Amino acid sequence: MARKKKELPLLEKVTITDVAAEGKALAKVNDLVVFVPYVVPGDVVDLQIKRKKNHYAEAVAVNFHEYSPKRAVPFCQHYGVCGGCKWQCLPYDEQIKYKQKQVTDNLVRIGKVELPEISPILGSAKTEFYRNKLEFTFSDKRWLTEEEVKADVKYDQMNAVGFHIPGAFDKVLAIEKCWLQDDISNQIRNAVRDYAYEHNYSFFNLRTQEGMLRNLMIRTSSTGELMVLLQCKITEESEMEQMKQLLAFIADKFPQITSLLYVVNNKCNDTINDLDVVLFKGNDHIFEEMEGLRFKIGPKSFYQTNSEQAYTLYKVARNFAGLTGNELVYDLYTGTGTIANFVSRQAKKVIGIEYVPEAIEDAKVNSEINHITNTLFYAGDMKDILTQEFINEHGRPDVIITDPPRAGMHNDVINTILFAEPERIVYVSCNPATQARDLSLLDTKYKVVAVQPVDMFPHTHHVENVVLLERR
Image (cartoon, rainbow, N blue to C red; front, side, top):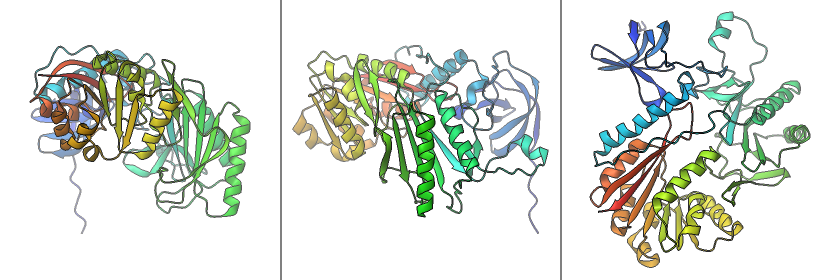
């Protein structure tokens, strides 16, 4: 006999008091801390507990008794279902207040180091259509919204192109309008969808691994260039012909596309780093521009997805570096060398290190394009390359700039930085929690002298933070 599922309680007339991690808000009911999405401090709600462990629980708001005066009206028709942009219900000035608080809390609670006054967060001038890259997934398992399920109707069209539903890897929400990228992105996606519907193209099934259309990537740039990459599974010659007909339709309908590409992917995942990308029309790249510097962006290249705020972020990093033209700079986790090339005019020499070999090749190309001759780039695992022998060969850096992934820096890298003893360290982070952990390890030799949060992603809980450390 099946075990009866334990019924979880309904909490009535609960006041939301604060903002928590992962874009959720929180409330306290007696000794129980409750995390709730899509609500804001000041809302008074009934909460249905979904999961409970000891002294904390996760819940959803099932009824609103009072709306907070801080609440904003979400502008996206997909809000609350898509899973992105969870803070649309908060006015932007409130969002950045909570991001500032998040940075402060992490540095104080986790870092436990002496801190200067933290500078006010630099907000994004654009809060809509600010991304330069989006990827849309094709699926033959369209996610039905609550309203569609309640309608109890048999839907003829179950194919969709859009975003994955959180927690349902094979289900995709059909997106009509996304507010993250220039509206040309919506026009292209919807035109591709309608063409595929009209011509009975097969959409991919993540469980059975069948179907032709898999993924659509769209990149826009500050230079006005536009890249579109179509990813398909091709097992028959007729499917190759279908794909090329679709590409010809895209090229004809959107002549403003400067780079139209495709990739055949018959693997079980959507990653393309190990696959050949084929040019259909135009160039195999686009350019980004910053202070007259041009950065070549290919289909596999990494570039900060908010171009305008990336410029703000890099200016903060360069300012913190305090370069006079005489410094040797190490740029760790250099990616495609954007920061390295950006600061090179003010430095004597810049050495960039990055794990991904293709990114390092892009970094070298970007130096060549901009006639920069004082950069060197090395590919490999940071902890293996950045050794005492490497420092002995290339010289002790005056400044280290580090921009690690969300997991922060490996202990071996931190130990090598401590051995290198640069005068200044500029630590750029997309995760203030792991940054705070690393600052505590650097605290033996370095003092935090400046902190500058930067908001790259409006309507989300994500925040970048730049810290300047000086040798004690």
